[in-house]
Image 1: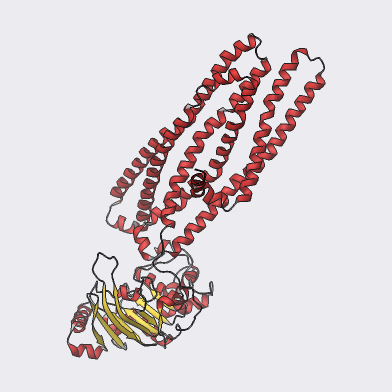
Image 2: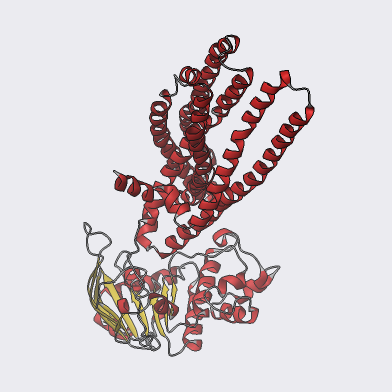
Length: 587
């Protein structure tokens, strides 16, 4: 039984978040709280003593002494109360900081698959509302819980010592408390989880509409989106009202039980004073102690509500913390095999889910260091999946992909990505200065000359210079104040700024015209000669001079060679190239 209780305690939110790391603060806070509560026991006894001696006391010295003692007790209580506020409430904010940091750091380690499972709004809700609920549980929840427990164990014995008979009648309704508490706390747990899940949906809807505001306005869907948001908001209010019912019942129910005890006290206690069984001072002290029991009865309801909220929120946080990355950084000391940029695919197979079809099937490909390679093919042929496996954005089987003869799974993932300049299809820019975005992955943050150089390579320097603040200009969310082509070129400049051994451009020039694309590729070839360049594109004229063209279809390599060789073969590449050339002439 003891072992079971210990296991439950070690799994509790309070132990995991607060006590485990901050034992010293928990101990000092508990001692301060106990000191406050012990001191709080004496004022009713001082009042009792004062009332009992008043009828027969003519010398005010004794009464003044009791009054001075009362003030001293209050002063000591104030000092100790300050201490427990610092140790409990103050430390709860430390726990909040620790949990938010751990949550954020864990999310950063997770793979692409995780972010397909959880939406941004949901994660934001867990990182704000849920962690806030946990802080309230381990701070105020723990504090008032300990306070209530102390009063429940200390006040009843004192009351019994004053008058056992009167105590019996006063505590007659107390056994109802545990039953009511257990019933209501389970209802709170279920309803609070429903509220948090609904808040996640609201966060998701807000995030989607703000990010996609251009689409919403261009399709004139503002009214419809407002209506959907109103529906979610109405549902959120209803769920909160359902939660408010058991929460609001807890405190008043326990207070009602306590006040019923006070009514019994006044009725029976008054008769006992009249009968001379107890003194008036005893009755007054008795009443003060019963009144002191109102707080723990109220505190139980509040404490249970906070703890249940914290427990439900911690479950939602644990769901994220339990997720494990598909790609784990290898702890190795080897640092060779990165500088040259030889890449080899050996019979690579891949599918996103075990129940789905293969996206890549039997890929064999060797890319020499410094070689310029273009991967082309119809949409859905597996081009992006293939290049995403090189920096391990997508996991690869052991001994299937090698860089400079080293299995990429045996290379430290941070070291691997440091030597790869990868530009994905989906462009992302931070709400920072243009300079900071370009130099994001480098150690030369704030160097305008360096950012200007890489912007020139990416063909966007002149457009940045036309902005009012030039390279000091701040971008909106996800670079919303830039065009699609400008965002793509900024991400290319950011990839080039890290001076990688391997440069991968995954169809990231779709929003610029063919002339600009050709200029950018020529700049890269000129200024990054000797670097391995891999380009995924649908614009075939821009890559005619590449050393190797790889044509993919249905997850397989169906053709490879130079432009001349593939044109002469009259295969898929010839068909794609002819179509592209015809579209250019029509434009």
